[in-house]
Length: 148
Image (cartoon, rainbow, N blue to C red; front, side, top):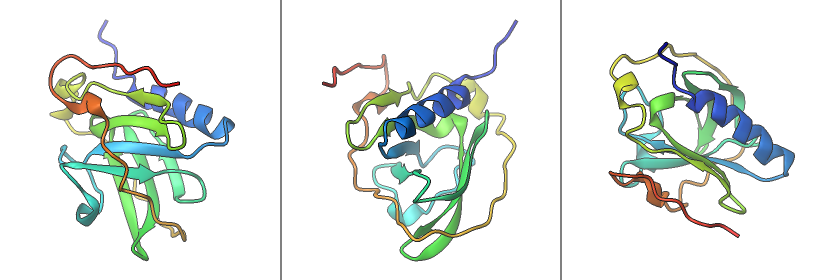
């Protein structure tokens, strides 16, 4: 039996865990992946880091096939869609604890695309795209780092 990708399920669990610990969830995204809808003016080195805390977004839905929400960037409301294959990691901003994924792990799934949800809404906080990208985004075997 062929299993579907587990990133959507894992991201929901990590997101809840980060919020339960009163931390800020930051989503690392491959902004160049197929079907990604993010504000390109905030993309750096092919990646974007999005603050997906409840106070920073509206209409957040963590789907099995991706993450969608509405947020303001530079005061402009935007609808964001990040398909599951474009999710590089989800971590607590304060501690950098969470999970980073191997970008090649679900490459075959990226070819088929995925359903997309439309959301409306606004909020008053801008995500902080200035965080450094995770080191595990290089090709090859994923690397792990001990975080204390």
